[in-house]
Length: 407
Ligand SMILES: [Zn+2]
Image (cartoon, rainbow, N blue to C red):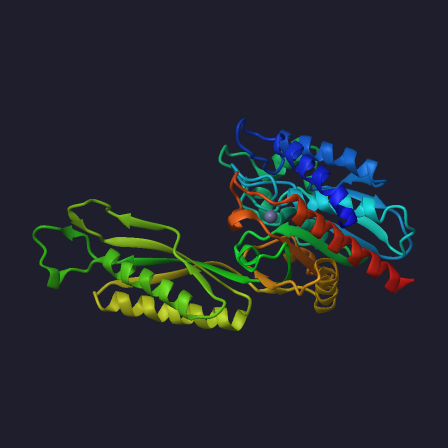
């Protein structure tokens, strides 16, 4: 049995303890700048002290535990916030596994300082600001974000200051002392379950484009307007939605999703005059993603033109794909091979992570842990003790290897 098996039950118990820090009884909801997140942070700070780390809070409310060492800093961590009605492990597992790793390598004199970050906001569930916590370390907090308001109308800056943060200190320079950033995270997909593997190594985090496409035709009476003289916006949108799925299926590595359609006027006896359709496109390769988006744009134009409908294509945002550091990734894969005895899968993360931000200032490496059914952002999130033990073992061996390299 690998040594980390001793730590795994504690890791799961701690995730359970964190799950009780929630805004909504009976659910796990822990959003940015809430008392629930502060309680979770307090628990983690106590565990940090037990692991010999000195906890501190930064201006955005990230909890960072540090053990001094000579030279640069190796950062491990993940986020402590959740979506509404989320699960126990998305984010929290990475923080707690990092603590277990710190305990494992604790007695040794490392040739670098060790820090564990519990980021205050990755999901953006309250203010729609993804990676807010890790953005501070990358020097990428935008002043515009401070004006975002939650559903109750509370400004982000006010919520942060009332919560013990400091909205006037978010223009701190990026961290330039980082040797690397390592993050353990549940996979949030089915690859590891299908491959029957406990962990996988992340190659890259997919780039993403989101757009809203408005199809505009003419609303008309469903009984009296002949089929030949209609300008049916929804029929055009529907044809295109089918094409989005087809292009997604036919293009290797691409995921393309229509998740929302808003139809007007929206009555059973009226030919739809307009349809606003969301589009989310992701791929590890930015060129392949851009090519797919161009194809989808052309198909939308064609589906609309065939019915005398017009389209307006509004891109909401696009982020480039983030490659994990090739060297750290190869080392992580080798550690995983040593621990499991087999080659573990390389995966592209379709979901965004704090590593996207940290990638701007440090080499990043990510390890995925198999999660039951590939389910995430849901109370049914589940991992096994055995898989968690492997994740601890792999990460601890990498930290030890990085230490050996620098001696
Ligand atoms: Zn996450």
